[in-house]
Each structure stands twice: as C-alpha cells, then as structure tokens.
Length: 200
Image 1 (cartoon, rainbow, N blue to C red):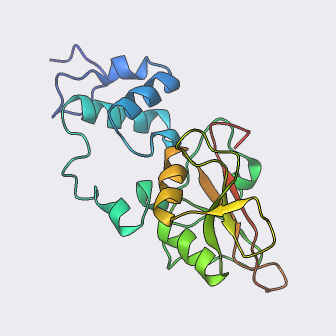
Image 2 (cartoon, rainbow, N blue to C red):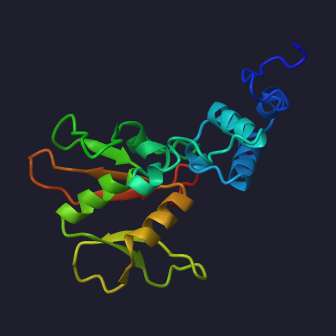
Image 3 (cartoon, rainbow, N blue to C red):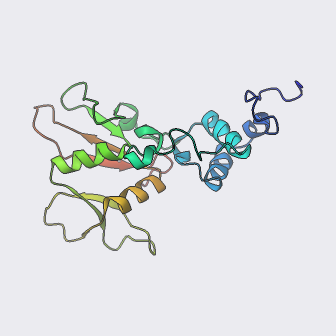
C-alpha cells in the first residue's frame, strides 16, 4: 500500500498527510481550530499536519497523557513560545522559558513564555494582577490585556487569571518579559505579542 507517499502515521491509514501538506498553513490552522486543537496558532506546518491527521483519524487530544497540562497551569505545549509570520526579532532573540524552574541565562535577558504559572508567578512577585484596558472589549470578550501593578492608570479593569489566560491562549499570544535589568534590579518590563499579527 505505497500509493500514499508521505504518510508516516501507520495507525491512520485513512488520513493522507500528503493531502494535508498540500494545504496552506492558514487552512490547516483553521481546520485545527475546528478540531479544537489547542495552540494551533503557534504550530509550524509540519506540526499542524501531524495534529490534524491525528484529529481526523479520531486520535484527537482526548485522553492524551498530556491533555491535562493546561489544568496544571502549563498553558498550551507546556509553555513553548508560538511562532508565526509576524514574530518579532525580540521574540527570536528571547530565551524560551517552559517551567518555573528555568533561570535567565544572564541579567537583563529577554525571556518569552506561554506558561501560565511562570506568568502568574512573575506578576505576583511584582504585585501585579491581571487586567484589561477599558473600552477595548469585543462584546463579551476581554479587550487589550495588561498587568496592573497598582499605578494610577484608571483605564485598567482587573479581571481573573482564568479570564486573562483564556483570552491569552485564545489569541495565540506570547509573553515577552524580563526578570531583572542589566544592573540586577527587578524589572517590570513585559509585552504581549501575537506572532500572527503585527498589531497585537
């Protein structure tokens, strides 16, 4: 049965990966979303092909040993950063953080993560709480995400971490941040980036 070259998943004989590879990345991402595959926005084409093939064959994510990772605060893909056409150079040169145990390679190092507990711990250490910018909401959905450090910005409305992370993951964002400045003092710098759109 070698009439389907490129199908490296013997347990999904009814799914043609060759056909999937012929699809555009945007089409694969849309199908991944339709199949409720989390983290699709940050996947490369080959990862999308594998995930969609698995979902089409009924493999899906249900019952996967790692499917409860989000319940543990890991976020999609265990905190791995999401990549896309609009990824910034600062993301490219940031150290990827996938666990609360990871340490910056040096003071002032730019870091990036999608790991919920890493983000939450970073904010907690600085007295920060999850917030959204008033007036930027889309219906029932949160608007622009921020972390409120208790300044005098009256435009910020505090929200729950659950709401914040649901929006963060739904938009396929990365959290780019700094632990300490180059002089060793604590830094509150952070930025949210959508690797699919330059206007995140």
